[in-house]
Length: 108
Image 1: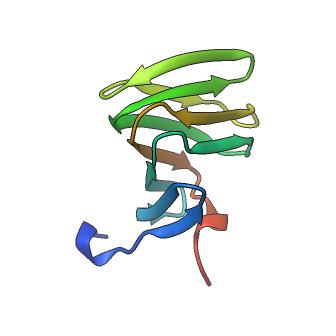
Image 2: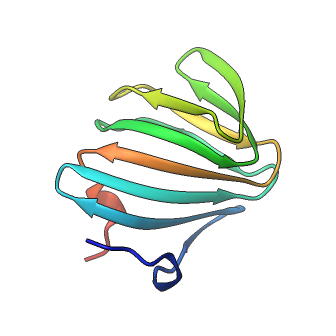
Image 3: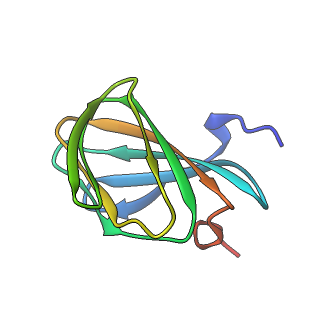
């Protein structure tokens, strides 16, 4: 599967957060998420493993009981079922990779 980014629209999730699925297969998915300054990625958990790359900006990242500030070029890993979320301290972009794919992100 090839993804030309200009051919994939963002989904507006509201409150300063937009997301688009870039590529996926049954066992893997890559997603781009854009946050306006001050926007929240609400605390949540899921059964998927996740690795996130901070492509732009600066984020306060909540991983279980830990809180860390990450900036452009940093990464973090989220183990399955760990409660996590982010707060954008500046306009920010995350590239999230999930295994297996997030079926809930796919439209029917």
